[in-house]
Length: 108
Image 1 (cartoon, rainbow, N blue to C red):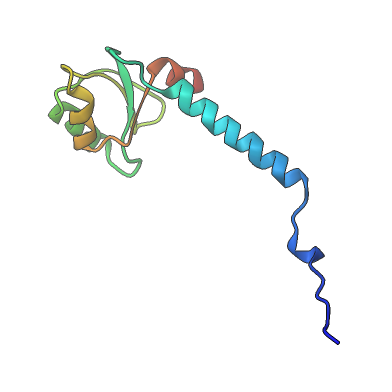
Image 2 (cartoon, one colour):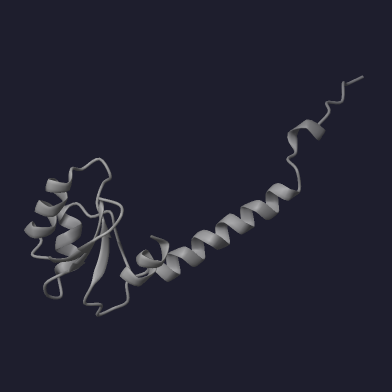
């Protein structure tokens, strides 16, 4: 006769499914609310957190972006990109994420 293995140890609690759906909806909603609107004049940009403040300011200046204000987090700046290709120049300068500055201000 074959030995029947207990598969009950391989399942996870049912509340884990609900927690996974909650996290997925939270991140989906955050992604939609942080999205930069087309034609936005001012955006909040996130640089790598290990960069120094001087390097962050130099990267923003190299992309011809005017710095509007700083935030409580040194790697997050609110800038005004110059022209239609301003966001792509900022990404080339090292920006990880560009978000709506009002949404970023609400979080900080």
